[in-house]
Length: 451
Image (cartoon, rainbow, N blue to C red):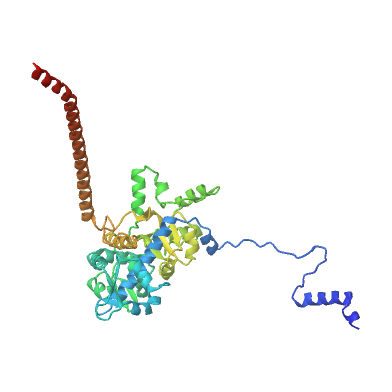
């Protein structure tokens, strides 16, 4: 009976049944199939795949990593400054580690930046505490002072943003999210807006409105570049009237026909950001995209560091009439915009505004933030020494004077050694001369005595 059950025929039938039950429903024989059929899948071309395969700008990516570390350090400084005595224990700060956004131990992070945080042993409680260094405290106060001094420029930025919108209003929550990018103080709602009732007013608790339109401010930042290109490079008006500055990253591959398409796109007319297109609606897709590119270019030009997180930029899609996929549009123009995935979020950067990782046209608020970044860069190096030539210019001059004095001392020492060597050589020569003259003098003395 066992030989019948476990015979070769029954075992083959059992294997076929198990293969069918396991889900292998592939027919092994047929007119078009000789085995397992695998369909060819078209490669997916989406914003995500284009973002992963884009040409990277390593300098801007490195800058974003440094700015992320500065952002974390500023968040930790804010937590410490909220304490009553101006310091906090490491045990207390470790509980707030996730609120700051750290994925490492708080003690290891604070020790990485001794120019910003000072860790010491509390004399009474005998536990490790942390406080902000005087250099960082001075820079934070200097940034707040610069923001207060530039209130007029900030109001002009807000007015230009309101003129960019379709109905002259902006959501207060969207403004709060980009307050640091626009250089706004944290209490701008109560400290700044009431000072300018003739320019801005709160239509509702969540809506900021424009009182009157100022045509003198309705000029985009790109127009200055176009005027400079037209006057200095003697280019034709048709080539500069609707053109944008193009700056491709290193290693960008230019395909066949790309230059001709770019040249045609540069000459394509479009409705400029501060012009209303209600009377003459646009139905051409390319012109609509170019108008959105102009709005994004102007929005980034109004920020302090010429960059803004992509997630926060999406809050202005509807109010600025940008009803498109912003990430796909930004990736379509890599010579104008750059999306960096380094840091805590995807950040849109205006390429023409940066050169070698620094802003081409700095402003007072950016200068102070750059000094803060200079305290991040050295890490644990140069403790007690000047960390940045921009921040310690006077000490740098004194150091150069000390170096010059040291060089002078080295020269004087070398001259003294040469003089000593010369004196020793002359002494040796005189001794040798006296030793040579000594026998002759002895001979002359003996002759005189015999005579």
